[in-house]
Length: 245
Image (tube, rainbow, N blue to C red; front, side, top):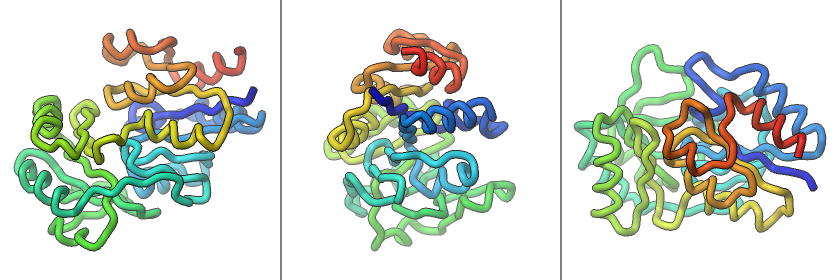
C-alpha cells in the first residue's frame, strides 16, 4: 500500500538554517515511489510557498492548523472561516504582548502587525487589523509570547467558538473543531493511503492521534515523545523507517 507522510514545517522540516538537503532528497525519492507528501502546519500558504519553491512540491496542504486544506493545485478541499469581528477582538486583547498575524488564502505573503527590517520579503507588515475586514480568515497567530501557555488556556476558556494551540512561544487560533488531525481526516476521505505524521510540538498532538505511524524528535518535549510511536533525528530517518515497512 502506498503511504502519505504529513509533516509539520517549523522545527521539523524548516529550521533557522533552512532546510536539510537530506530531508529534501528523501521526500523526493519517497514521492517518486508512488507515495505522497503533505505539509501539516500552522502557517498559511503564503508562509511556506516562497521557502519551498524549487525544493518540494507537496501533494496536499493542511494549513492554518487545519482551518484550510488544499490539494497540490491550491484547490480548496476544506475550509473554516473565523468571523472577522472575533479575530479583531482577540487580536486587540493581546496585541500589546504578542505580535498578531491573520492568515488568509494568499499564495505569496504572510502578514504580521510588526515585521523587523531584516525579515524575508514574503513577510509583509500591516497597520491595522481592519485591513482584513473583507478577507476570509482561516486562522490567526499570536507570536513571540512569554505567556504562550497561559494565553492559549485563556482563549480556550473565554472563546468557546475558537480553539487555540500552543506552538512553543506562539499561539495558533482556529475555529472550534479545526485541528491538524481533522484536516488530515478530510484528506483521508479522498485517498486510501497508509498515513504517517511527523512533528515536534504540542500542536502536532492532534495529528499523531489520527495517523497510522507517528514520529517526533529526540529533542522534542518528553510528553510529546511519549505520545508517538517513533523518536527520530530527522524527516529522512522517518522516511527510511516508512520505506522499510
